[in-house]
Image 1 (cartoon, helix red, strand yellow):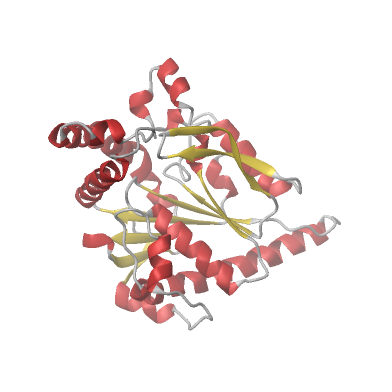
Image 2: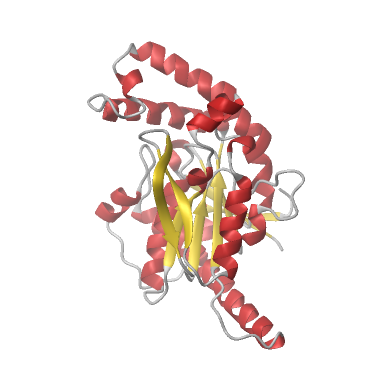
Length: 304
């Protein structure tokens, strides 16, 4: 990571400014994913400088698109600014994405700030079973990358509404006939483990559409602990809901369920992290590194 500058938490917070952004502990609780944590100190120390940096990127983006349209004698149109947020499962990407969206909505009340995840572009469970890759859910081959690329292309270039499929963690599958509609947002935040990956033999990559990329990082030993803790919490939440994917684990022997989760971590999630997700970290413009209890202890900023 020699092409990054590293800033301790104390050093990073000096880059923040007092924006007119107001959040409460209750608001943060609603934004925080299961078994994640974020505090008002995090907002001040980590996210305020991030928002200030984003503002620089956004102003440059707007100026660049306007100048390019003038050069090409094109009529003025809004070109959405797309943020990609990547990292392992259970590392806290969703919390980062929701908090950033909330802060940007307050900072730019007249702009449309949208958020979506790439989970909706996973192949259906039936398709994964048919192809014999259900145990590789989350790996690059388990996504419909062509559809994701087409979606992002349409968001960047079309004035028409664009539909994205929706994934449910409760049923552990794509929800049939359900879509998220995205139409010319000012800013679109795209969160997912695969947003910075470069699948082979493609002319256009997902990351080509991102104007700013963030990677949420942590040591694998910590991520495994968070993953297993979240798995137990999901079982607790599902114990009275037979339609929930985790119900079958909740009503069985807990030690067997935890042993299964450990195997899934080792053979699927850790393998995916090491082989496909972690190598994309160097494509990020900004890296948030977490330590114990999801505390962000330092930030890496690309030097170019």
